[in-house]
Amino acid sequence: MPQTMSTTSSYLRIRPQQFQFESDSQSSLLRRAFQRYMKIAFLQPLPPNEPAAAVDPSAPKPHVIGNLTSLFFQIDNPNTDLRLGMDESYSLSIRATPQPVAFVHTKEIWGALRALETFSQLIDARADGFFISEAKIIDFPRFSHRGILVDTARHYLTMDTLLQHLDAMAYNKFNVLHWHIVDDQSFPFVSLTFPNMSLFGAYTQRHIYTPEDVSKVIEYARDRGIRVIPEFDTPGHASSWKSIPNLLTPCYGPNNIPNGNFGPINPIVDSNYEFLAVFFSEIKKRFPDAYVHLGGDEVSFSCWASNPDIQDFMVQKGFGKNFALLEQYYETRLLQLVEKVGLRYIIWQDVIDNKVKVNPNTVVQVWRSSPSYKSELKRVTSLNLKTILSSCWYLDLIGYGRDWEGYYRCDPQNFKGTTAEKNLVFGGEACLWGEYVDSTNFLERMWPRASAIGERLWSSAKVNNVDAALPRIDYHRCQHHIRRGIRAQPVNGYSFCQAEYN
Ligand SMILES: CC(=O)N[C@H]1NC[C@H](CO)[C@H](O)[C@@H]1O
Image (tube, rainbow, N blue to C red; front, side, top):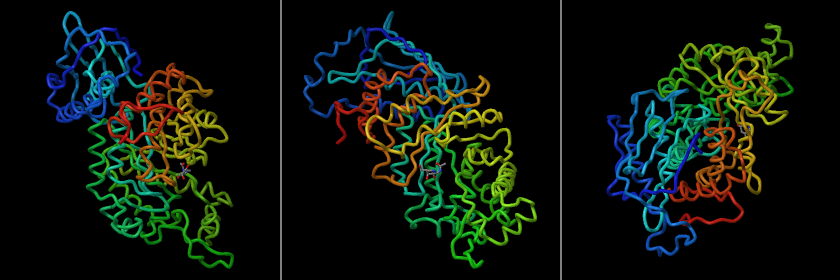
């Protein structure tokens, strides 16, 4: 839902063969977007040879007063970086009188992409043609970080799934793909510096993302105004990093000999920080975004506590039995080496909960839903740290019925904070963890449940009435997902699409 939108009951017909997007900008990204949306905006609304009568006879016949033949884009500054804080605002005006004219004005090219998506969603595709009403829209996102976490480590996601997902993200104006690319269970990311990591860490050599795959995802996302932020989660969730000698902590059994298991990254081995510095300097080369996600969640202390060398280290450092201090020691050194590499970072809230001192640019991702995410938001923002919320939006946790309503009601700034603290919450992410998700069910489990979060993160906080949203998310599922080839599951107990998924 745009920030401001007014329409009239005067319609213009669009004949795709006599319509084009136009701009003075020479941007190749914009040209590709124009080509893409000429297809998307004018997809046949109904299965072929469907009798026109199938169109809902009660729907009011549009009052057509002319033909629209072009949509002109004026972009003030076409060559801009894809970045946190990029300008995605736009105005869209469609007028029928004195003669049909349609016009978009944006500051940056990213607003042009968002305007194209809105324009495509305004088109009323009927059996007897394509129509669009007069409209005046002034729009911009409420939050600048509107992300989706995908997990390619618990189960592998095919490139086709990832690219379809990026298409759907664009249909919902998301702008960050948080690629949780590796974890305990597998390491599908092919490192150029340390090829053994995927050689020994991937499920098989087919369950990998080659450098070409990674570049393809980054370019495909960029074309849609979507940043790609990879997550390399340490010191926990790193069992698959086992090919790096001495990296993981050897766990000890009760008789003080190694029991063959390995735990979190070993924080007392200095060469591990040298490895991490080299690894993250590769990451900086491979991913253009200024931010990387360093994880830091769910570090289990039991293996560290079982290791006699670590026990000695804790005594030397005066940490006693407080392993949160050892995690602080690790995180402090990690954040320093990553900063030295020239990357900014996002971390899970656990790092803050363990009282690690972080760089003021740090972004904290709040994900736990207990004791209360609202008190966590207060705690993190009172440290003057930028924050994104995920707690309400764990799409991997499934139940029965319209769970999207809860996602829709959750507002990231709805906590007891000062205005300044609330403004530090600059967005959020839906998370679809991969424990029970792979390419057979990723898209239908993601969409359109994530659409409710997309509107929460783009639209005004005042757009929050679930009853008003129900028919819109239902329509959005059919017209902008199913019709565009995205397998999106039902959001309503009973409904149908003009063109069902075949
Ligand atoms: C930050 C975070 O969420 N960490 C773990 N918590 C539970 C999730 C499943 O719901 C995943 O296992 C995830 O790896």
